[in-house]
Every structure is written in structure tokens, then in C-alpha cells.
Image (tube, rainbow, N blue to C red; front, top):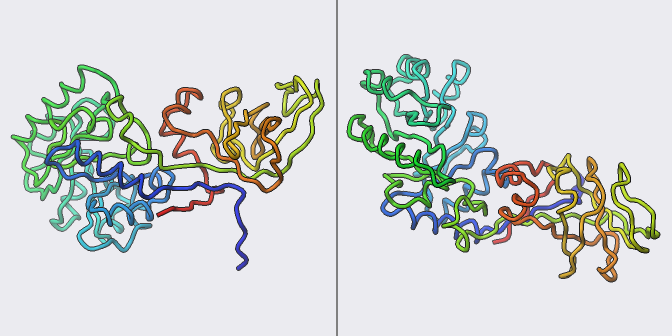
Length: 349
């Protein structure tokens, strides 16, 4: 099969990924530090993310679905993998076959696992205020979990990225549950929860966003390193005369004779129209503002001050997560997971 190079690439920094995990692990006190690698490792590639983190010492991983779990087989020795969305009727063949635990999140799932799980260990999610997945507290304390082999009891913080009274309320509720529901381990904190302090760590933390370079709370600023560096290849460099317009809708007019670098990238790749007016790129330390609208798979940058830029050159996009989120009004999660399959993933070690 002919190898065809992509005009888009994500340069991925494994050392930054590992450094972020180690910083998060240190913030959790005595708690083990796991990793959420759902959505294909937040778009970086779950298998490679797992490989780098296992080598660094991480042993606990979380995905969303059984398809994501199956894609990671076989697991390395001593690695634990859990499916956050629990187990539906259609999932039972995978749940019986794979060395993976469901995170049971409803009375129906608990009953299904009890009937068909053959006594295997499971994880359980309790809703302490998110009102998303998880048994209600009164359901969990009403006997529904009696006799289950619970490996990890989990809950999820709804407002950890904010200074909200809900954080302390959920912490208190989960502490109470720890004394009343038997499990081998207890886990509450996501990336933002880790930043709230070691009290939120319990036995196991489950960071996601911060592993990949996101800043979930101000406490992480200056400690979390950028992992993802998107780059796009220049398809064409063209001359635009003063007064001519660029792109759909003629939203940008050249104020002078200009050079425009057109790149192989657009909203089909997760580089959305909201970047217009704020986006940009760098070529050999020179900044190139994004001009005009973002098309499906083409964008234009003003390269007038870039010197001898040519077709085939690579542009480094402005894509630090916190700053880009603020400018684009997208969340850091959307910025990461929206980068599509046309981006080649290239890990630097």
C-alpha cells in the first residue's frame, strides 16, 4: 500500500504528557493517579497515550465505551481498565469477554451485572450532585449494591473548575458514602478536582484534560505543559492586490498588496469558523494572522510579513489550549477532541 503523507499533523510531546501526569499525581497526595483516555485519548490516540503513561507508572485507565476498551486490547500486565458508561444489554458479550470492569451507573445496570456478571468485580458510580450518570445516594444505600464485588466506588464533581460551594458539598457526601459502602478503592477527582487539593484525592484520581495540556483551574497554570502542536502544510502562496477580498462572503479585504498562504485545513478538521478574527499561525518565528472565513478544508493566512514562505512549508498553529479557548469561545475539551482523523499523529519522545 502506498504511504501518502498528510497535509496536517499533530506533533505530540510524550515528555510533556508524562510530566503532566507526574504533576497531577503529586497533587493527589497518597492517591494513585489514573488517566481518562476516552474519545481516543482526547484525540491524541488512546493506545499511544496508554503506552507512554504505563511506561511512566500509571496503572488505572478509563474509557467511555466497550468499543473503546476493545480497541486497547491486549492490556499490559497489571493495567486496570474501566468503562465509564457501564454495561447495557448489548454490551454483555464484551463485558464477559474482556478483562475490563464496567462502572455501573443505574439500578438496571446493577441488576444486569448481578444476573450475568458471574461474580466478577465491577466499579460503581454514585451521583452526589452531577445528575448525569450514577445511582442516587438513597438507591446505593438501600441494598442495591449488597454482595457486589466493588473494586472502585466513584463519583464525579460537577463544578470543580469553579470556586463553587457544590465542591465541598459533594466532597462531604462522598466521604459519608465511603463509610457506608464497601469498596476496595474510592475515587472522586477529575483534573480540576485534583487541583482542589489532596482532600479530594481519596484512593484514586482520574485526570483527563490536564494530561493533554489543558488548564482546568488557575492552580495548574505554569505547571501543565502543552502536549499537542498542530501544524498545516501550505498548499499555495498567492498575491492579493489592495482592495481584493479573500474567502467566502468577502469578509476580509486586503489593505495593501499582500501575500496569502492557503493551508490544507478547515472546519472538517475541527478548525472551526469561530477562529476567524482571532486565529493565527507561525512560520519561522513570524506570525501569520488568519484572514477571511474558515472553509471546510481550506484557510488563508496573511503572509505579507513572513518573508520567503513557499508551497510545502509547514505552519505552526496558535493552539495553546487555555488561550485559544478564551479567544475562540470553544472549551479546551472541544479544541482537543475536535481535531479529526485527517491529522497525522506524530509522537516525539
